[in-house]
Length: 258
Ligand SMILES: C[S@@+](CC[C@H](N)C(=O)[O-])C[C@H]1O[C@@H](n2cnc3c(N)ncnc32)[C@H](O)[C@@H]1O
Image 1 (cartoon, rainbow, N blue to C red):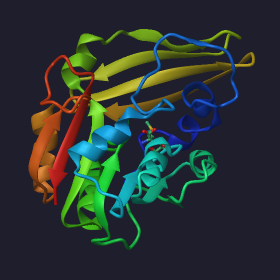
Image 2 (spheres, rainbow, N blue to C red):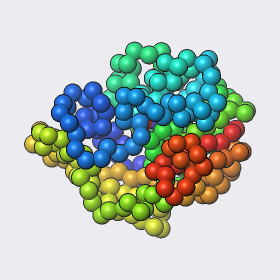
Image 3 (cartoon, rainbow, N blue to C red):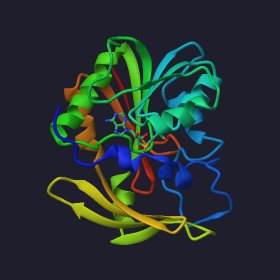
Image 4 (cartoon, rainbow, N blue to C red):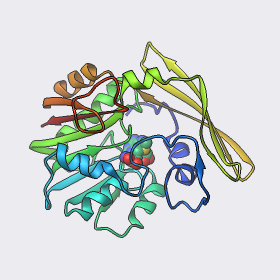
């Protein structure tokens, strides 16, 4: 396994839940945009995934990098047999607190457990792919292919490159709360690696700390070709409304069949 490009544990921690996860106890309205698509109580992602993947009650689903369990819990509530895997113990604890019948497993998406052929469907939501060097990112796709049964299907939710670049700014206040808590992000885009690197300043209760994280950006054809090389067929690109991907969509939902 290659060296990490950033410290995921310092990024996906209790501060992250405080700012992004409803019910974090932060209180008060939030100003400014909330990033991502899964950070809401209603979770429209569940219905989208249901339709795009032809989900049915009783199907086995892996939510890979499930975070605090919003999507995993919603799919379990609809009758799927859901396993959620994530590297963050804090997130898994929050996920399990919802009390649904999801099996939550702490693990690393680069080396999944002995689950070969176990799942009917895999979901990977809210830009939870592309944290490593490219060889390792492709290993993750290979791991997904391994744990899907033949004919099983995958859906990944990523930033839509065209929209993402159109809205790119050198810095922004990503979240600001009434009490002065704030996430301030400085952005760096490296065209040679297609990596979006963020230097984040977390201001909470008067304390300030800095962290960095990054994610790989994908144009659809590149990810399609990576998925094909990993053994997938029938790759398709959609927007967040399920229609074919356009430059106007915020999200790129990629589906593929094992
Ligand atoms: C942007 S969050 C998305 C979480 C969730 N899918 C959602 O929609 O809310 C990315 C997730 O990837 C997890 N993660 C980061 N590195 C990981 C790794 N090597 N293996 C498994 N999960 C990882 C983080 O802990 C975090 O929960």
